[in-house]
Length: 210
Image (cartoon, rainbow, N blue to C red; front, side, top):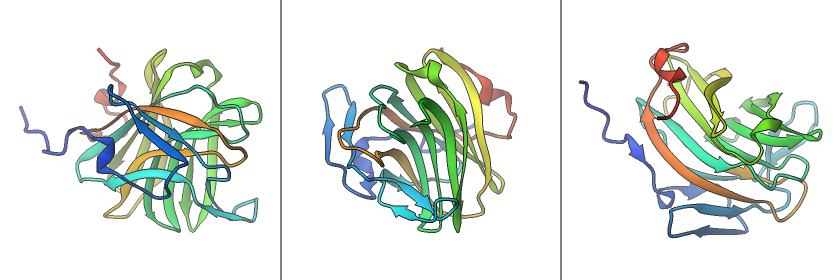
């Protein structure tokens, strides 16, 4: 059996640094982190809308080589336009990814925004995941980041995005934004490093929880 990297395993929420401090954060005795987002918090860069938002909330730490990162959160209470939570990968102001679930056009949308100078956005509906625990996973394969997601009621991984990512170093961690309202509260249940995917369609990426 090959030896796992030392960085494999749970990540304590106090290991990260906020890109922008939320309105409040509470860590309970069970290790659940509740985050209340500030009104107007978001990331977007130029495309279609013509504006730049660079003030979302992401709890970030270094992304170690040879690992994938997973974030778990409860999909509950998303009622404002573009309420969102998930995972963020940050290099700098012009190069970043955010992926997760967002309330948009009256539906829960599972998707990703990939920014390389300017942003793009891909989504697919996930209304059936409301009330479940959602896991978002990011793994590097060659020059790409592979984003997958699943929920506690639909445990098979869904491929969300394959995005080119030629950067050697990045920060990564839980993300939450509330572009249009105050009061969005998200409960993050877990944050961990796992073994990175060996290939895009690797059998291990399709395994479901025990």
